[in-house]
Length: 153
DNA sequence: GCCAACGTTGGC
DNA sequence: GCCAACGTTGGC
Image (cartoon, rainbow, N blue to C red; front, side, top):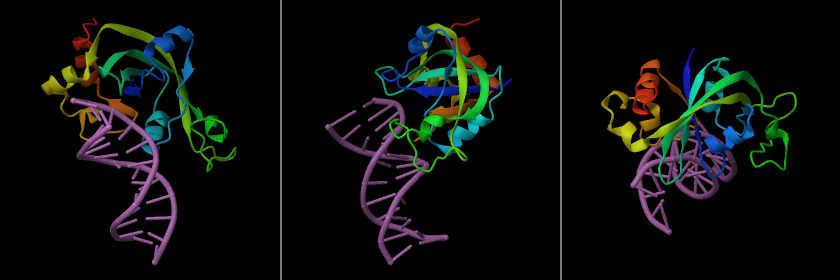
């Protein structure tokens, strides 16, 4: 079992939006090769933090579970889609997505400021200067620590 | 709105 | 293959 982190701007898609769906959702629209490769490395049962970015209080707000392993992200083929990529074809869709299911929403989100203040987390890629990847790996130690900060047993 | 950092593009 | 220009991300 491995651990990950997904970033999302809550104004576009928040954890509550996922909760409201009441079913797993494809994590589509990722158009960065490194982020795509992380998704391709995900296995069913893996857990991931849901992180809210570009908002008043950036924070880890909860958890999701990978419930379907990577498959082609066909939104890249749709010219009307915001994430359309003219290089993608049916034979070579280029981009991948996974399905995620809601698992938990923290009563107390772990803010970016709290993450930065925790010495054990200084190595997290999320906290690295200039980091822009929307999908990131998380170590089991980091997973445990952040869950602790959220007050989750 | 500003700015730093990064990925991508395109001219050469 | 180099590198400048540009667009995007994301914190503040």
